[in-house]
Image 1: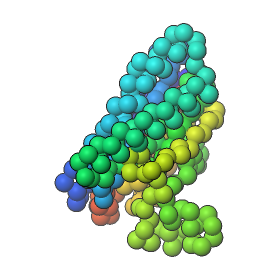
Image 2 (image 1 turned 30 degrees about the vertical axis):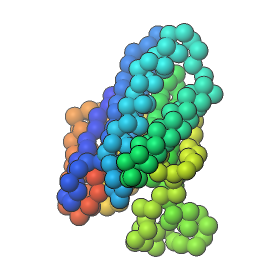
Image 3 (image 1 turned 60 degrees about the vertical axis):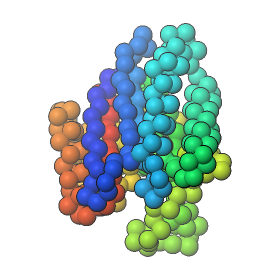
Length: 256
């Protein structure tokens, strides 16, 4: 399998700082190409959200550049080790950000959604309400939003339509840095050929439909990386024109 990746991030129409952070990696290995993408959305209602998201991104990138690459070279990579590594990063960052916040009398936190594609498998770690999508002939959400409204919908106490309009739609059940304990979701699956994997902050998706995502980013025959980049920018601008007030970040990985 071969991968191509692009992204777009935007401060949006209202906020003074972009508290979203992201990173992309594609490397060649003896086992074929590896792709890694991560999006973190610093909490807009909390202080120093941009610091929280940047610190978590940096920790995951250090892991990829140092630990993961060594595991590939040594042949010691395993799904169990990956889960342990990622959980350790999240628990460490949750503790360090909590200490920083306590020392400075502030509260800061961030979501985390990351995907690694290696040897035909994808691995996802997820905290909060950023999302990972799998785009084929339909758009499938791989992650589950860890929000108050998502919990209410799952329990049957709220309809999806009510959740979209509820003022509490961005209230998180947990995030890295501002929660006493964090329990990440871990997912594993088969990487699909001729597919696009999309990782986004919640600001990207509030005003954009899955049909519109598919129209601009689905893996149609011959769609180029430039066209995917254009689709990211187009949907971001559409989101802003519809008065989305949050920061907006999207990263896509195309599987060939």
